[in-house]
Length: 143
Image (tube, rainbow, N blue to C red; front, top):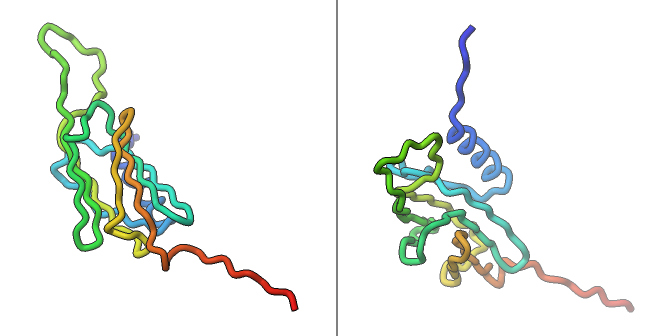
């Protein structure tokens, strides 16, 4: 009998794929040169789409955010501050290095109205929906 080993990154990609397909917010492939893949939460309401990217230990200048051809790309580099001399790590899970994530934006998002804020290890992007994409309430008149 052979042992089946499935990498946590593969499981993560499969779960990401399932949710992206389910919520119709497609993700493009992560850059193959990435050293780590930050986790992303995406939520939506009537007025905006909000993306939260988990990237602790970085500064706002460490990120590059670009929208081109309806694709939002977030990249950056987290530098390790660990001193490895004379240390025998029993376990080391803190990722550092380069990352790049790309997402196809929904048609409802106004590409000119995307705001980014970094606080407490979370990069938050607020993407305002176009007016014509927002739901409209229709008043029912009684006659």
